Length: 227
Image (cartoon, rainbow, N blue to C red; front, top):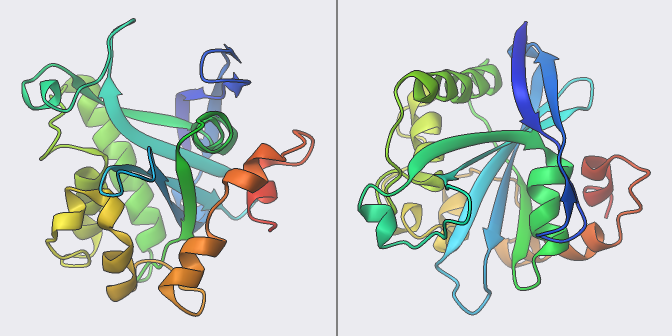
């Protein structure tokens, strides 16, 4: 059994108005049943620029999300140029879906957020992928690394985790560095479940509208998947 401390579970009303809450999770990596990929476009007019994160679904229905980000000091803004100059540390944020996904899909006016079910090949690789993320989280605690806007990002790290457990699963491509361009790569390499075709999948995977209608009574993860 794994005990994960400092799992974020903020209650967001806006990006600046929230209740801070941290919790502890206990789980068995062997009980991961699905893996989800979230793709957030910060601004639809700037298609290549996006953020990726993952969510691990367990047999009991719980879902634990992980976002690989920069560790910013209070009041510090992110800039991609500074991100290439050793200005930010790399951080793995573990959180509930209502926090990590919710703040993006519910509170950010411009962003558009997609939720894809991942296709995991190889027996036992659901578990191994989660364990890979956990090992890296612990390693960063003991050996901090610099974030790099090109070589050490959200997407490059996700790709490294996937290829660690299934070598060659994700080929080299420009969209690894510009994740907003990744849907074609995801479809071509059978990395996500496709609903008839890619265009339809991109349409059906949008969760912003459903998120904005969340009643807070039903589990957030169940709600955004019910459409």
